[in-house]
Length: 425
Image (cartoon, rainbow, N blue to C red; front, top):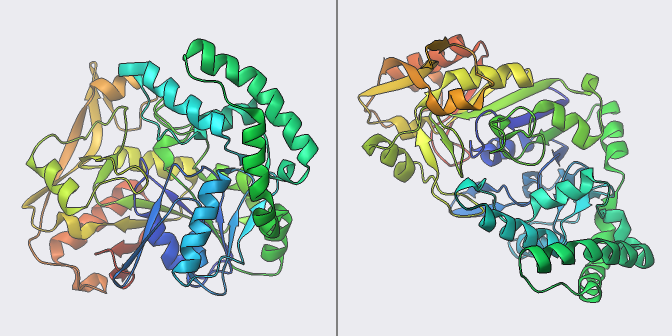
């Protein structure tokens, strides 16, 4: 795919294998841009026997000529970022090309504390956050009391903002949640110590990317989480705190819609989600266990076991519409090898109604029963397939059924975790 600006995003509930997909496209990209989220979403990249888990730095850092960018729509924990920079340096990758938006908001220590205690006190109504402070950081951003990367480089302003924030947060931490208040001077000192190490990476990333696109350079926009976790368009309230969808890429990066040439939606050949929330096709049987164990369905950041189920094409059609998908990238097709029969949801039945489009009522998703189409499975090992014709006939029919039902062409199919284990159509 020879285009200048491409968005790669999750078309399900996240964990679709976007890191591997972004890594594939990043090989020919000049810039790879993380446009939203924080270190609550990781991506795993496999290079030979080496496995790298990144949660902040865009995967373009793996390529010498590529500039990784953390844009304004992200929330940034500087300590986590610096740890990843140190890890990459030890492993032989140079992070010196990294660029960070001065407008990105900082995740502060009190955000992490509040995230943890609020989730604890929600009990059975908990959302299933990673407790890394992302939600509270975005809350402060939209309440217009957040602290941005640029504030780190004016110690007086930074100190004033921390003191003002903790005057309010400490009341909540101590009086509501019975935790010890935080010391403003300790927080300020800890963050200002990191400022000098971050300064070389900070710039106006919107201008940087605008100029790059104007010059005809290749820019790849990398989403975290997935469409069904979007704060506006996902299964609210069991969502993330930002917009992983294509519109969020434009806002987060500071660009207009005319800059984008293609939108690639990444989807597993089945589906999974982590944390709480409705999941119509979730499996509680040996097939679900098969997907978890064979697919290594455990979170990159948290290690949590993911909930797995049959592919949901109602949800995937919804993702295609919300994002304006131009292509699909199907991952983990190899995990389905060995199953005699495959099922895919093409609709829902519930409360006396039938649904062929994704319902907006949360109660419907909780109570509906999937309407399945059964397809023939295959037993062959497909990990060596490199052309579409190399796949078993049943696997080819499965892919064609996806693209015909969703209305978006499948351009790539991964058949294993290695970079080379890929079918390009």
